[in-house]
Image (cartoon, rainbow, N blue to C red):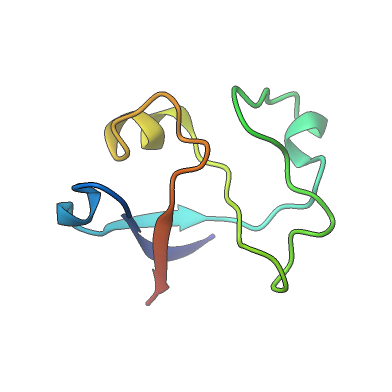
Length: 82
């Protein structure tokens, strides 16, 4: 896997320090294939490419502990590589 730094945007979120995260690129249907339910939002689509706004799927722990929410859909993040 790869790592980047991510920082929540909006309200007072930018006061929080960036967080180093690990991530992997997966194809549409990955979570369904493995039987992993999406609790909110949507799966990746074939048109999720560099021509469109970048989307990500996060786990519950990230949403709760870093974003301080159980409803992360629509939250904006700044992601920067190392």
